[in-house]
Amino acid sequence: ESDPAFGLVNLDAYKYGMSIQISTELEEDNAVPGMLPWILEQAVSGIRRGVGAHLVTGTGSGQPNGIDNGTTISSIAVSTTPTADQLVAIQHDIASPYRQNASWLFNDATVSAIRLLKDTTNQYIWAPGLGAGVSDTLLGAPVYTDAAVETAGVSKKVGIYGDIKAGYLVRTVANIRAERSVDYAFLNDLNTWRFLSRHDGDIIDNSAFTVIKNAAS
Image (cartoon, rainbow, N blue to C red; front, side):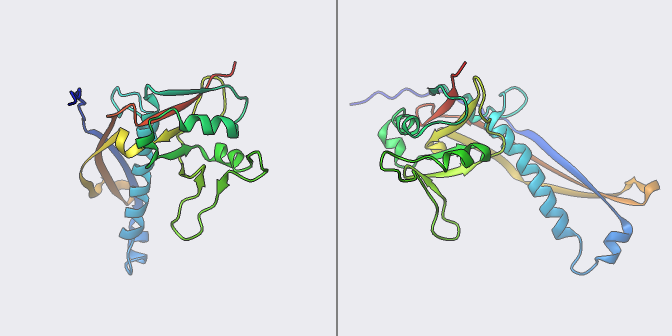
């Protein structure tokens, strides 16, 4: 028998948006295939970056509660990046069931240094993905990068390891809303596109992942 304990996590819907202004001439001169595909691509990319940064480092006040606020901490003491031994130890800071679907999340600057690490047999612990769409691996787990993750420094949270999908929940409300106005910048003969989207994210299982924090002084 077991008696699991459940908590309550409230997911809100914080609004993210961006606007793009283009001239009437640009729209007219690019009627085929049109400017809309390019505009949509820029909007989706911009909103994704804004939301993504808060999903990693958000404070939880007026914005998502970022995953780096997790309470399971792997403390390391380094001046730059984790050592190979420290990375092995970090993997055992979470329960083995979570390691089956675990991945690493680092800033790209940290990854560039980790790729040079070797084991006791002088073999690189980093393994490049051998195909399109196949992630590189570190000690057997996929590696992903995000510019919002902190880099080396005192008390910096330099990475995440674990089953992020099991430990963190993202809410997206409907699709991105796109609206066009020819009146907003009428005097400048500009057409204004506005894009709005609502998102939130929060930690649902602190046991599923660990936050790698630099404890060096």
